[in-house]
Image: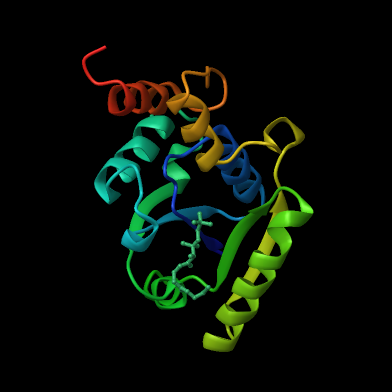
Length: 165
Ligand code: PNS
């Protein structure tokens, strides 16, 4: 059976925390569609195309890359999940602080489409404190993000924050 799951998010930009979750999802599902939310309201640092490109480049040498697709969606997540023929969503949980928002989102998605289940996986301990937001904050303030994001992300972040340097 082809077990497919959608892993949605802003991915602005992708971090090693996201990749850790992806690898966990691939232990359970045959294929994962990474669904990058257009999300203009969140005023992302990177355009949709840049975020997708960074994901693809971060996975370019990954041994499981053939089981991963990168897509984009605008509007309701459940509609995208139906469109790709999946019936499950995967999300990561780091700390209790993530729970409230995730709980609300999962229940709203269930209300919108009762056939789609949301599954939560615990992020690996190594990545429990990182998020795209904190990575951008640290990089912007001149701190090192070495070992927290894939190399193409690090390069792009520094280019964007310190052009011409
Ligand atoms: O990485 P993020 O920013 O926490 O991801 C949040 C995301 C994009 C998964 C969520 O905002 C989303 O699903 N947006 C699409 C709109 C939608 O379907 N809303 C209803 C469920 S909350």
